[in-house]
Length: 428
Image 1 (cartoon, rainbow, N blue to C red):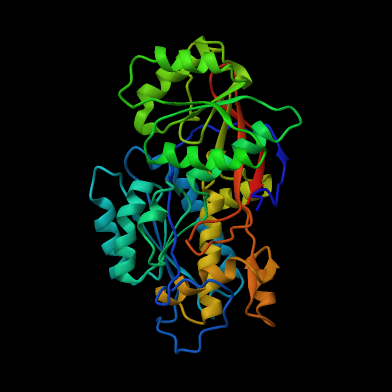
Image 2 (image 1 turned 90 degrees about the vertical axis):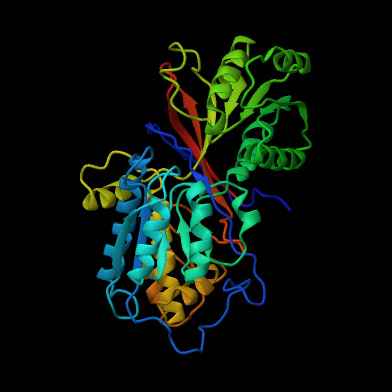
């Protein structure tokens, strides 16, 4: 079955200022006892167990190394709730927001903040922005029966660990970019010889396997498959093997956990002659290298990052919530997460977390398409079977809480070793 059933091309020249070690999350594996549904289901007939007011908790990093991510996601949630409340709220009551700080991985802020959200009777949590923190939040969500929807957690491994139906994400998993890479590198008329150089940790391996599977759909194989460790300092053997294979393109699959080795590997690969479009980076190493290499070192190098680019209209909407906003990363995904939670509560006629978790899959796919909250409410007048498509893309949940298809952006490095958005595509 092809993974390229829907492709949308968007061309632009927007610069992206930061890239983050964003994260992933796994979703619910549906069992008889799981709140997730495998197919569209009718409105539950049980009596509502919520208190009548949908309380949305947000758990974004307002302190710590990744605090720069919080503002855009906060604005995305605020924009969604403003729209929802302007249309009558959820089940006749305005939605309430409870915001807390997730902190960073080296602290216990996440646990303390989640406990605070539970004490304030939130029904759904939007966040966190880190895969590491998402992993720690999931068991807390399961215990509290409160669904967590992350706009930014991307690690593929989360889906393999947790399957209780309370974790969802509106951002594609890290390994899904294998299909975006395959389309870009092997989807043209000219066959390319491709080398994959990666750190064999959980993420590098997951991307490797997906990339190999995606290339097979184009009858293409890797001509070199080289591994380096985060502790590697000598890349001579790896470079020799790559050069011997004579690839047209080298892809580097590594994360910020191996940032020192990644920089060294990139430098060696460029020095070996794989410059410009002959070198591709992946979402957790496509970053700002303006301070790492001499100007022009990465000029023309390509990169792939998950997440859509906001339209001018949506940027205006975000700025209505925060006029000082300059970065919009994950804002659209946070907006869509909030919309899906509200629509699930409406279809369930219940704002309780367990009810929302059980309907999130249903409202995301398979029904009558609607592109805004007001449009979905209009559809719900005659049918409970809706399919919300959001500002970040189709946002169709899988039974595991992932989204498929997902949006991926293609980037090119400029003369200052900074990446600039070129175009994007939806793969699914």
